[in-house]
Length: 220
Ligand SMILES: NC(=O)c1ccc[n+]([C@@H]2O[C@H](COP(=O)([O-])OP(=O)(O)OC[C@H]3O[C@@H](n4cnc5c(N)ncnc54)[C@H](OP(=O)(O)O)[C@@H]3O)[C@@H](O)[C@H]2O)c1
Image 1 (spheres, protein in one colour):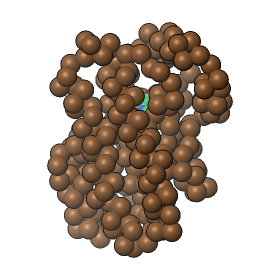
Image 2 (tube, rainbow, N blue to C red):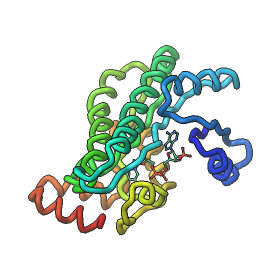
Image 3 (cartoon, rainbow, N blue to C red):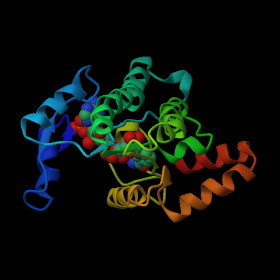
Image 4 (cartoon, helix red, strand yellow):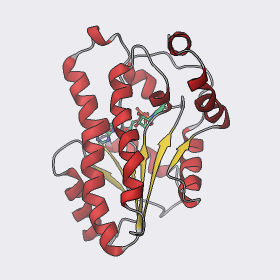
């Protein structure tokens, strides 16, 4: 079940999938009650959710002092609050059925100081922090929980965030593939891409100021 707000884009994505492999639902995931609406929709179709992927997210690239506060609030609402609401709504049934899985799409930005993306990084740090504990709380419940950390990925994200596309983007398909494979292996956290995984290991050894300057150069 593909969920987003733009019906035409959903139809486009569905058309690219093998026949009969999915359905779409036009819904603003931020709206209070949206997860319950999705659950009733699924129930009405005789479907039980085995996997929830909280993927919808937006960015905002500009100095924090210049940011539009309404945009920052919308970003917190989508990236953090809606993700919490959907997780809370779906995990209850999964725990009852003793079967299910949740993938939270965070971002590699949580591992580095990222000038001009402070608030975005903070929304993803919320997702990162949930993922530090929830998998342990859910241990033995039959519900698997993975936090996924993509690096720069080919998508419309940069357009929406008002930033240049950094070098070394990977296809979104790779993010999905690695995420599902990591979930299958029972991992709790997964950084997408060998280069990014190396980066996450090496970053803590480098001076933070140097990393911040590097991050600025790559995104400007
Ligand atoms: N691209 C990157 O380099 C990158 C790196 C790290 C992490 N991420 C994360 O990856 C996730 C996916 O982003 P992306 O790169 O695929 O960006 P994208 O191309 O801009 O896609 C965002 C998706 O979220 C949906 N969406 C946005 N607001 C929504 C709402 N209120 N209700 C329902 N759906 C909504 C959009 O559909 P509609 O507009 O039709 O609703 C769209 O399908 C995000 O969480 C992002 O933070 C991206």
